[in-house]
Image (cartoon, rainbow, N blue to C red; front, side):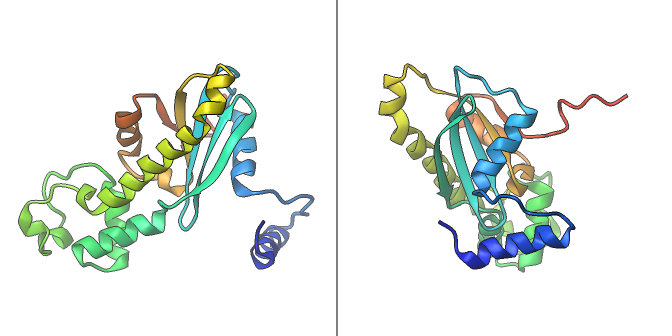
Length: 200
């Protein structure tokens, strides 16, 4: 169920690009179908697809080419930037630049905009303190989504999650792969549709 104005807005964008719209489907399903064209799904293991967008994010859990669960999550690119802005009391544009430049990685010396802030005087070495709440919510969303399927998956003989694939603008957040690898101890990769394309 999607508001009509949202659907019509997307259709207009595609039409203005000179293409004819023949079908409309939910973003997570379209993304999953796209990923399946470029990656060979493992028919025996569960994969979690995490799409972190600017103002909407979702996760999907699939076994091979069958989706078991699709749900919205609260962690978005915009909320991450807002968290940085509020924590360091800086402009949104500066917060966005810091997010793109450092992500979850430490800095050797505080960026000038941070050094001038109150947090900078407290020896903050990365953006992680500003993002702690949002990132914790992301972990909780993943855990709850998997647990909600656990009974059904146990009956089907399917084991634990085997990997996480990250898509969307949030996949560019430096350090996001190692951050997610920590609590789940499974491979985490950023989806790249060019990986399987051979170029002479």
